[in-house]
Image 1 (cartoon, rainbow, N blue to C red):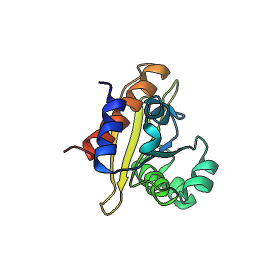
Image 2 (image 1 turned 135 degrees about the horizontal axis):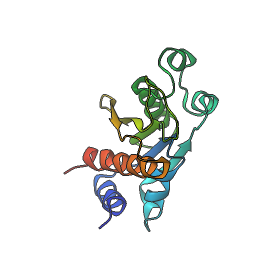
Image 3 (image 1 turned 90 degrees about the vertical axis):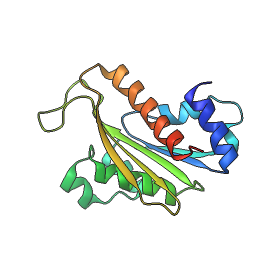
Image 4 (image 1 turned 90 degrees about the horizontal axis):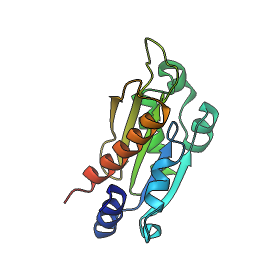
Length: 157
């Protein structure tokens, strides 16, 4: 069973509803979930907020947070996840923001991706994963898979 299929089954069993907030993955997490038949039972919506303006308008990310930390940061990922949770019917939301490449800097290298997981009644968790300069497609696929794994872990029996 794929991670997405397992996620849909676990979410259904738990009565959970999922939303995604994605930047560098451009909707890949939502696409993986909605590739599964019956996902409409557990998936409310996905926000693709590639620009900072979209993060602010669609998810309520604060300009001050973006200015202080940059789009690729755990504080922004947390605000993205919390915004997705509050602007949907979801009980669980994941956020992804990163530098898929090519490019990056010494401060924020290619392959750095920040994640956050927000759930109703629980503190928001965030983490940063360094996937390295593996190439845009590889970083995006690994970020998608990591986001699915975070959602699965949140719904572990």
